[in-house]
Structures are given as structure tokens and as C-alpha cells.
Length: 215
Ligand code: 5GP
Image (tube, rainbow, N blue to C red; front, top):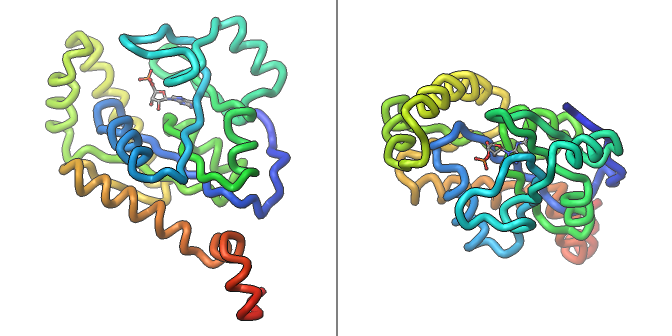
């Protein structure tokens, strides 16, 4: 659900990138690798009602909260967006994002397609990136290889994936993750191209623009 409008000025300095993909397409690994090589990017930590998995830590991968606490945050208008994904709730809080963008950081949201489309309504200049697997067969192979899920859960994820992939047409960019290094290069290129836009350069290089009397 879209929660609230932003108090950010229209020409906020940071870029906002939103990455979505079906489960198993390699989104988390790609975003992690991107963050390692690009120190100007910051990730926004979401809130979720799901329980931590494996080595996950409160405040690192997610803010893990109870359904009641999540409900209170919705009531208080604390989220830009939230959605139910695979039976749990996930949300992007204002606190996690707004200050970072205002400070001029570039922020990456790694969220599901519903959240991505909600963010685009609030932040029209957000860059929406959808990561596709090269084929249904390969997606199924990757989900099986992960060894995290039962055959029933994998079958359900494949059904969900068809619905999710159908939303890719609403995104600005498509990255096909056939070969990890190529997909990472594509992701880097999108981030870099956004920084070269006139409006972004005007804000990030005021001295050059002023010297050239460019408005
Ligand atoms: P997981 O439980 O595997 O970490 O995440 C399940 C799905 O929820 C993934 O597609 C993930 O990107 C998405 N997700 C994580 N945080 C958010 C959020 O704040 N909002 C929305 N809409 N989806 C999220």
C-alpha cells in the first residue's frame, strides 16, 4: 500500500534505485556485489514481520518486528510503501530512506515489484530495475540448487515468478542475469548513466555548471 507522500524537495540530490526480481534470479547477490564496488550507494534496511534466517541480524539485513509493531508503523504513516510477500509483511520506512537521499547519497531499495511500483508513484524519478532469469528452466534449476526450500515451496515460487515477471514491462531497465559478471556490469552501467543525467550533474557539479553559466 502506498503510505505517504515525501517531504523531500523535488530536486533532492541523491538518486534512488529500486531493484526487483523473482526469487532465485540473483537479486541479492547482484545488489551485494554492487554495494561492495560502489561506496556512494547505500542500501535501505526494510522492516519485516518474518523471522530471521541463518546468520541474519536485526538492523543489518532487516529490522525484524512483530506483526503488531508493523501494524502500528502503518497506522503512524511510517512507511513509504509496504507489501505482503510470501505471507509476510515488508516495508520501506521513511526514516531508512529520506535522510540518506537528502544528504545526497544514492540509495538502493531491494524490494518486491509491488513496492517498486508504489515507490515510483511517490518518487517519479526513481530508477526501476528488474532482474530477469535467462529462462524458466534456469530459474527452477537455481531455486533447486539453493537447497533452501521444499519442492512445494519451489513450485509456489515458480508460480509467483510468472506473475512477477509479467510486471517487468513497468520497469525502466531490464538486466538479464545469465552470467553474473555481465549482469553486474549492466547494473553498474545503469547506476552510472543515471549520475550523468543533466539534472543530476547540475546538482553534483555546481562549480562546473556555474563556470559555464549553465542553469
Ligand atoms: P526475503 O524474505 O527473501 O528476504 O524477501 C522476500 C521478498 O520481499 C523479496 O522480493 C524482497 O526483495 C522483498 N522485500 C524486502 N524488503 C521489502 C520492502 O521493504 N518492501 C517490499 N515491498 N518488499 C520487500
